[in-house]
Length: 250
Image 1 (cartoon, rainbow, N blue to C red):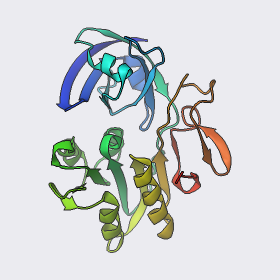
Image 2: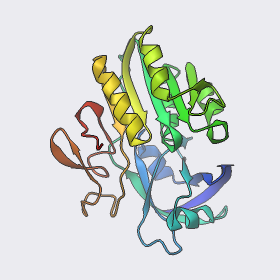
Image 3: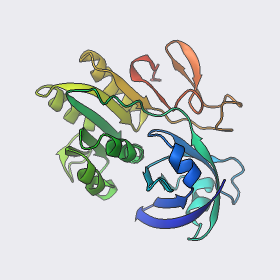
Image 4: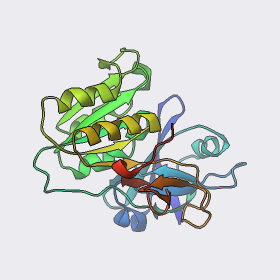
């Protein structure tokens, strides 16, 4: 669909926050799904970008980092432009309102973006753990604080929040708090460790994977990964998988 760009902000260096008007997509969007966006310029293939939020069942918000020619072209669109978007795509996070104990949302870097919509769906029940390189890269912490019970921040260099990795914060919380389940999105090494810690504590964990995509609908088999001993397509079978079944590289 052609969706009008009605909101545009630059949150940090190379980080852009877009809101598009697309009622049909917004009504069907689930947490953890993504949009496949035709960026224009020299980018021939669409780019997959996670849904950050849905507003008033009419607007979809997505936040992205400029990494190459595709996202660079996307960042140059101005308000009123129409973006060619396919979506919402993929299988998102599964919600479990029956959970009695804390539910942890763990994000790292640009992986924090899709967790905001999930936190809102939790209606205040989620505890959010966010990890960044340094104070300058901390994004959206205030927004998470408005929709989550507790928000913990960690930076690699200690310039803001806890000095260390977000997985260290996770271990501290698990040592003294009952937890029902974990959701995570971020760099693969971080998620691998989160899933390992979850396994050691017999906790279910859902992980949102990121892979290079071609078609975005499962036809080209470009974005495969191994889950439960089988090859899966991140775009069609995921991007959210049972973290205990993901075979992490490295």
